[in-house]
Image (cartoon, rainbow, N blue to C red):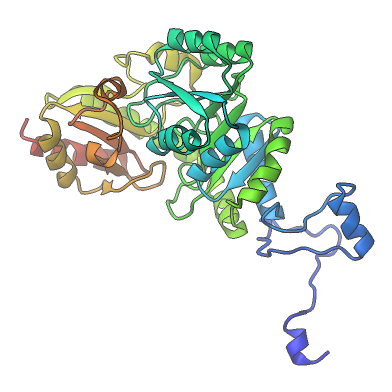
Length: 390
């Protein structure tokens, strides 16, 4: 074999029997082969397991899928290149012209866009309610066939708590699929409820380091099986190296989530006692209007603390600018603490009544609590509150 040939066909290194790596290798390859045409054809007919093309499946991404499904308490999973990719591909795979979707004002802005605008262009209609309006959900389900009920809990950014048991019971009784964006709550929460499909942004708590993007769709096998071909054709596939980084991040998922939740609870307590703060939105506080529901549904209350400043937009800008340890940046769930002002949260397409239901005011601030020392974070928040002049 001449050297130009050898560099394209390097010597194979195979581990001897009984010898295993502690960390699985990254299968950074697009293509896989079988030894013969006959075996290739068997694979293509579904008669043998294996891998052929990484857009469809890859051993590294498959390991991540199996781990996430187990964490969420479901049978199978599909991973995507981003969290919004998981949402969009799920919506496109599960709906068709003349279907109807129930969604909520208190929902991630790109999700609202996808349901109202993108699906709307293809003849999918929707009803948008408040997540607190369970009676409205029941009326809508009774009035017409509904394909999907799409919700999140806690909601972004005001951390309203959905009554998951009520919503899923109503959806199931009406023959609708329930789809829950469970990103805020994480993989260890809400699996006991009869949610048909969970979607997650892996960019957040799964990765934990803010340097890789990904999404996941987790459900029972029959649903994932029906979606897999569509996902492969849509092409929003997670790269194997990104899957490896997310697998690495998940090793510290539980210790991170619990530590960040503990710090968030302390910061929420500081905010609740401060005269510059009108209201704190944190489900772990007894004063949260759905605290009892949150206690019944959740093990940890998460790392997101939202609150309303009495001084409105001007006070919000002064607060955000005065922070030293919180980056003024999008996203959440990573090791660094972040702050977002209402101008960064979207929602401009909502009507005045819908904006009222969303509960986002000109003085609303969303904090994502990281892994800095909690005493340093408390000091930083207190200093920024003093700078608001309220």
